[in-house]
Image (cartoon, rainbow, N blue to C red; front, top):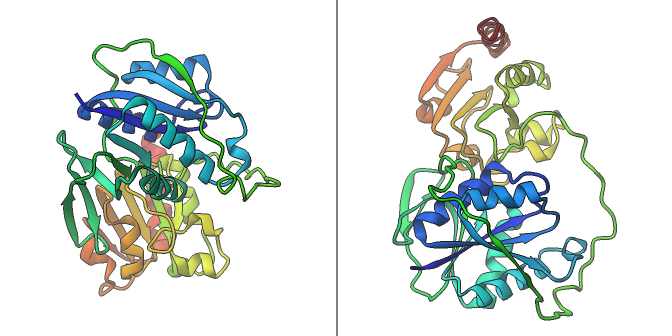
Amino acid sequence: MANVLVFIDNPGQAPKKSSLELLTIARSLGETAVAVNGELSDDAAGTLGAYGAASIFRPAAADLDDYLVAPKAAFLAAVADKSGATTVLLENSPEGKEIAARLGIRLSAGVITDVVAVDADGTAHKSVLAGSYTTAAKATTPVTVLSVKANSVDPEPAAAPGTPETVTVDAPADATAAAARITSREQKVASGRPDLTDARIVVAGGRGLDGDFGPVEELADALGAAVGASRAATDAGWISHDAQVGQTGKTVSPQLYISAGISGAIQQKAGMQTAKVIVAVNKDAESPVFEIADFGIVGDLFQVLPQATEEIKKRKG
């Protein structure tokens, strides 16, 4: 049976849903181990065991977060060698993809990013060309590295959960990896909304909002959703750039994606095409967004969104 390694960065008190998704995929591929960086509570370790982790590898060094991603890649490479992993799974975040690339070089491994599904034989499926096509790929190297998009599977606990053993791994010193050091951090103010890349529902606004994200934020809060935006909206300064969805922003794959006042240009489609259900609101009936939407509403978003918000609040009591 193949050995599968899942990388989880700073799980803290409880692993994220996307981490549990990776463990669910990993169990379908073989015996699962987890490489963890950062804080790991006893409850979080128990959750990893409940989702099939047979062992947990921790770095001997406690300062991996003091640097950019290279030391994490070095640690993960050492764990892959020690565990005999033939498949490594990471989150499809910008950092996860950079670690995957560096890990591929260290292990001479095939790397596949933006994965939306993985077959039991290791074949990876991904959406390409702004979601116009779905491709299947399988690395021919001894080790395969995959970065998987959030919301690709529903997380499911293992049928026979266990208590994982903890192993400490000392990654070899690498002066080059530690050349760039983080000197300070600034905590982002919490919005109370879910993380954009992990959210099951995303409400996104664009140029049609004309600077007023109030209706989008109110609908998002009623739905318990994350707020996204097009590049036009972030470039105009209406919302921070970390909310941008698209080719030059974040890629999301929620169960429901509501697009309000966004034209649906190819750059935007590249970031949200794999959403399970797409609802578009736009006053222009010829807008390209309606070509990819499952449901379309031609109308004034400043009337449509508040009505939807009010109805949702009524149904929630």
